[in-house]
Length: 365
Image (cartoon, rainbow, N blue to C red; front, side):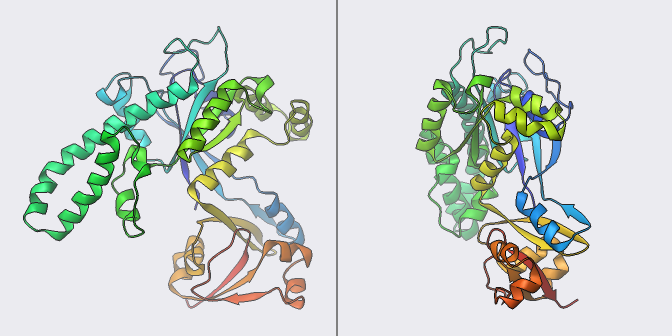
């Protein structure tokens, strides 16, 4: 299980440049004019995780298979998109298909690159996009509410429940707040997610700064960080130009180049970690002579659910999970050492998977 992250923002904020760097492709045409991205470009990339390489070395694995993340570069949005301005309708349709939104904001000054609204105001840009998404959500809900209300008044229980759930979102949206701020019971979360509202998706603000600000940010990114803190959103500072340069370098030269820019790692690593945190995702591993592999589950998943990520038969026939915590696996040089040290555990159906668990599943075929 990975996740699909939509890269959105106003035109000319560096979305396509960032996408190209992240996927190390030139699939998206980066150009200094609006709507250069018309069809959404999709890039599937490996999730970097140093732990996987260590496990593979200890287990003498023939293959190393990381988990993956999908980035979708979506056409630039402009004010009025909810009314069909620019490529509005297409933009809204594409964004409905992603799990989270990486909202790229222009946090640099450059007179050679035009801004669609003639100013550098990343917090304002974020509000422009958010407003368009809120308008689209509100219009969508209001169209659905009228027939639902009639059914609810007849005493239809399911219609009443859905109507009340929709009204939680409508009340927020009418008050200028995104749907993700709804106060939901645990039972309401999945039905609410199924409403497929644009503003219910988690948001990660990606501050695209100039090269000199990549390490510490600048006044523009600082303003976005304050906004993210108020909203409980994720935020990461990246220089798309640096990421573009890094992507073109041989692997052996990347660390030295990043160090010269005051950076310890590529922006991709930070972006993925921020995305994982945003969606509450964790990684577990399988390791053996054939392969070492990383798998992704949501935080709080139980052992049978993790087994099901590998194969549905594993979940249906689940018996036990052989489990070793990553630090114990490494400290004891593998499974045999972990067994001898008493760090090998047999966990049942109620076991909640922890980030870094090294697991093997017993199941009935």
